[in-house]
Length: 321
Image (cartoon, rainbow, N blue to C red; front, side):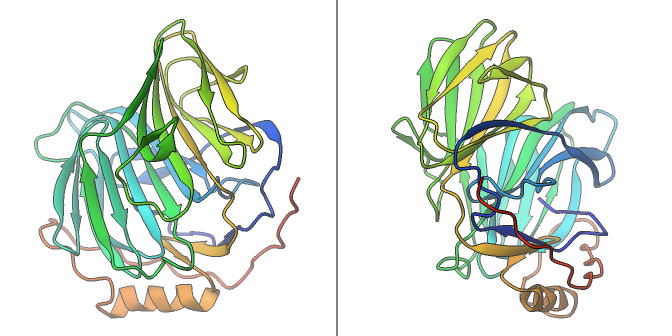
């Protein structure tokens, strides 16, 4: 997934400056961003005052959109470094191509996981023909210093482990939840899970007290620890929880995101995660002039050009609360 913002801000994320070391209920509102010709996303991370949740550094929610007479998702080839992209669908299909030669159609509840490592490029598009509705989330996971220059690779997993209880089915996307472990490659202690709740369900989801967590609302009407969450919003929960109360008024879909607080400070701009302004600047130049990120074959259209990199204007970090 690309960040198509032509005025992308350069920001410092990670470290423990923004981590809340106790349970909280902090409701995050999205910023609306146009993605391609007919897709608008609700961007939850990075958010004002909330940059990361564990290693999760970027969260977009889109749909459900009726694209029967529209091109749907059309994201031209673009670069990534220092991160993993996670594609997760509730409705529709997305065709993934990358500079490794990967070609895969990702369908609902299937994991598309691309580890950029040192450098990769890819495109995403709704197939032709495509389903009427498109609904899903695109997320990034920051890679720690020890692994951020790994060789790029792509994984597709159609079958994922599940945790079930009365009224709730949890699909483990990344990491581990209640003993169920995803086959997706991870580089930090992390969890991502899709939660399907039935109308009237009440459940308590087991959590790791050392993790910080957030819940993204995908559909329906649900309460997370007593807080109503509407589709397209995200509730930040802080750390220090061993369980999370959930309740659904209707059938509802949520995504649980969590992990150990990311110790390292990172610099994030456009589609890159690095450690300095100079490193980001070099990556932009390589994309515009060089071959470091490879070439995506088969996409019908030109690749994205990088926006202008703003001057350094990084703000001081906050404190642990």
